[in-house]
Structure formats: C-alpha cells, structure tokens
Length: 70
Image (cartoon, rainbow, N blue to C red; front, side):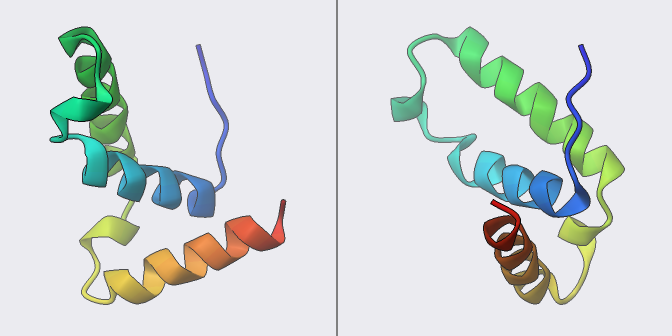
C-alpha cells in the first residue's frame, strides 16, 4: 500500500504520531501502537523537517499550509 502526502501533511502527521505514540490510553491493542510506530519511523526516515533547529516554526508553517489547502 502506498499513501501519498505532501511534505507539509507528512510533517503534521509525524508531529501528531510523535505526541501520541507513548500514550497508552489511545490504543485498544498493542498492535495499533506498533502500526503507528512503524508509520512514525518511516516518516522520520523520509523527513528532514523534524530534525531542524527551527522545528517549531516548521511545524507551524506546515499546519498553516495544510489548513489552507483543505
């Protein structure tokens, strides 16, 4: 399966997954958490944005871009 996302969408999704990945209350089964970890790791390998010094600015711009495009 292939899912196509813009860089802004991928950055926003990565940020969301990073924030909830350790929160057990979101998951009914550990398999769900494993799947999200897998997606998060794939995004982290592809994205440069989460590793920048100005990440707070990058995520805000990415969120703005996604909001404007929907």
